[in-house]
Image 1 (cartoon, rainbow, N blue to C red):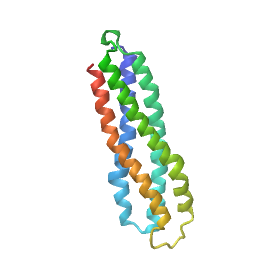
Image 2 (spheres, rainbow, N blue to C red):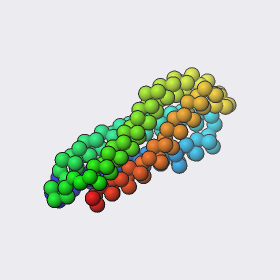
Image 3 (cartoon, helix red, strand yellow):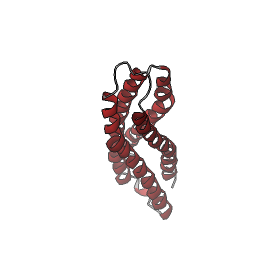
Image 4 (cartoon, rainbow, N blue to C red):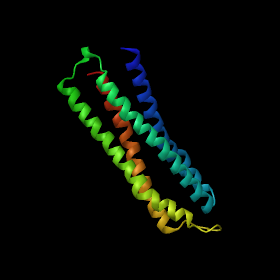
Length: 163
C-alpha cells in the first residue's frame, strides 16, 4: 500500500467515526439528557445539538465521498475487482445512499420546522409544544435508522477489504 492510500483509508475511517459517533452521542447522551431539563432549556439545547450534528455530519459525508472515490481508484491492482466485490460495493453504496437521504430529510424537511417552532416557544414554557414534539419524533426516527444502517455500512466496508 502506498502512503497516500493508507492516509486516504485513515481519513475515511475518521470521517466514519465522526458521523456515526455524532449519531450515537446524540441518541445515547444528548437526547436522554434533555429529559431532565426544563422544557424551554431542553428545546433550545436539543436544537443547538441538532445544528452541531448536522455540521459535523456534512463534513463527514463530504470526506467519506472524497476518500471513498480515492480508495476505489487507488485500490491496489493485485486486489482486483471481482464479482463479489462489485456486489458488496453496490450494497454498501446503497446503504450509504440511504443514510444520506435520511440525513437530507432531517436537514431539509424537519430541521427548518424544528428551528422555526423552537424560536416560537415562549420563555416560561412548562411543556413541549405538540407540533415541535411531532417533528422531533420524526427526526429521531431517521436518526435511529441511520444508527442501525451505519454498522451495516462498516461491516460491508470491512468485507470489501477482504475480497
